[in-house]
Length: 117
Image: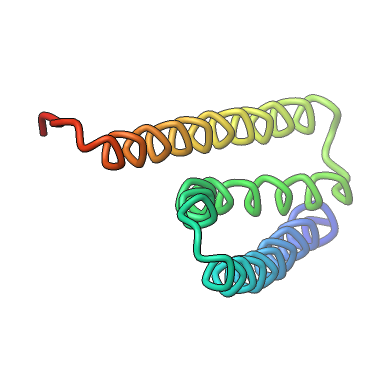
């Protein structure tokens, strides 16, 4: 009973997260090699901005897959789904802030403006 309700969805969620981390690693390796070929800073900026939040996306998708196959009651699924949505919203906010900060920093460096630290 407890095996079907908790352990199987947990194992599937953890496996999904592991697979997504492997895919994430491959994608960022490919992006790094692509940015080395085009020799522009925008590729590096995008990679540095989206690498940390992509961890949260992998976790959120893995949790969502685990929830989708679970037999939890609707009440628990509702609250866990809301938690996953919060993770996604927070990670998108982090990605946007990172991207804005890195683009602004790149602009300031190109214009050679003094920046207080």
